[in-house]
Every structure is written in C-alpha cells, then in structure tokens.
Length: 204
Image 1: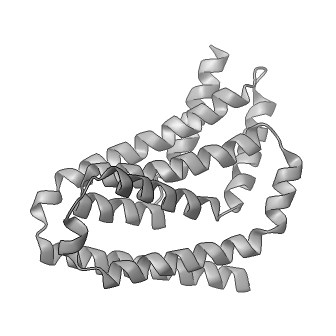
Image 2 (image 1 turned 180 degrees about the vertical axis):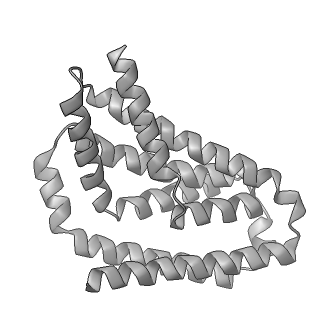
C-alpha cells in the first residue's frame, strides 16, 4: 500500500508539473488543432519524457549530475530561449495549408516529440524542483522507490497531455485555415514572449 501511495503521489506531481500553461502547452494546443491529436500527444509526450529524465536524476539522487547541470544552467537557458524563438519564427513563416498536409506522419511525430524533449531539458531548474519534492516525500514515507516515483511522474504527465490533445483535437473541425493561421500567429507570439521572459530572467 505504501508503494501505491508513493506512485499516486508521484502521479499527481507529474500532473501538477505538466498542467500549468507554458510553451509546451501552447505547442500542444497549436499542433492538435492543425495536425490532429496524435501530433499534440507526441508533442506533450516529449515533455513527459524529459520530466521523467529529470525526475530520475532527482529521485536517484545523482548529486554530481545535479551540480553539472547547475553549472551549465545559463547556456541551457540561452539554448531554450533561442529554440523558442526559432519555433515562433517557423510558425510565422509556414502557411497553414502546408502544415496541414501530411499530418500524422511517423517522421513528423518523432520530430514533434524530439523538439519538446530538447526544449524541456533546456530548463534545468526542473531538476531542482524534483529533488526538493522527492526529498520531502522520502522524509515522510518509510518506503521509497525511485523507479516508482519516476514512473508515476511519467504517467501523470502523459495523462495530462493525452487529455489536452484529445479535447483540443475534437475541436479541430471547427477551425478553418483562416482560424488555424490565427492560432499559429497567436502561438508564435506566446512562444516569443516566453523566450523574452526567459532571457530577462537570465539577465536578472
């Protein structure tokens, strides 16, 4: 029962980390509307996999890797901001009709997965959150299982992205190409603002 409690607590942590609206959420919504729920899910699962990687580092207490990530936090943050700006630029440049064609191709799904996986890994502050949360959980429970914690985070995050992409995907037919274009431009603006905010936080 204690392992089940650890798993459920970790699942809720995965949900709470994935749920707040951020650049990954914006991309998931945009791709679900234009390319379909499979594209949105692939986008979200990339972030879930990255959360699981950082969760594993925090759960297994790999202190030297935590220190190494903290040392390269600035380059990673700069990479993440640049990546967001590049994604915003590609959304502005590509016409909606072109993006809609060939939706759901396996190669595109892997591309969506890889892009958000890299984007999420560029935020090493996440590992500090996992380390603090898992440390508190270990202090409250007599039973700790890093593997159970990581699997809970992964599944919790994946559940959120599955729900979000499915709900938005059902609304896809209500958006014509003109509205898809508006969504793309709005998403590009939000991504650019997140990039500017990230650069500003670095400066401070």
